[in-house]
Image (cartoon, rainbow, N blue to C red):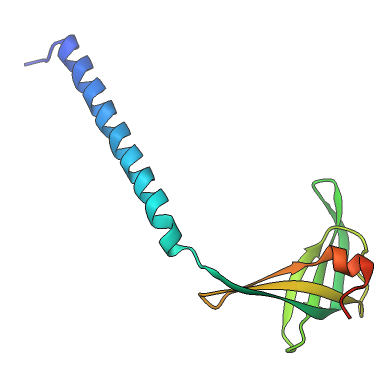
Length: 121
């Protein structure tokens, strides 16, 4: 037996409301739980690295960019895009900000201000 159109429309509306309510509940649960799963920053330090390789010039979003490899004081290397002047040359000393997290990860950022002003030696 077929349901009437009014009954089908009501069922559809009720189902849609339930799905929207469940979606909102999942989103709120995500917002509440997210801080427990994000790594916490422990400390920030400034190190001096040396440019060991400069790739070919390219343009990203209309800005000049160089794929650049940096040798860290411990001998390891990181690779980053240099997108602002001063443009890199092999052998340049570059200040990097290192952010340490509680999950043992590190994030490296070029400190352009100190690099331009030469305040990192």
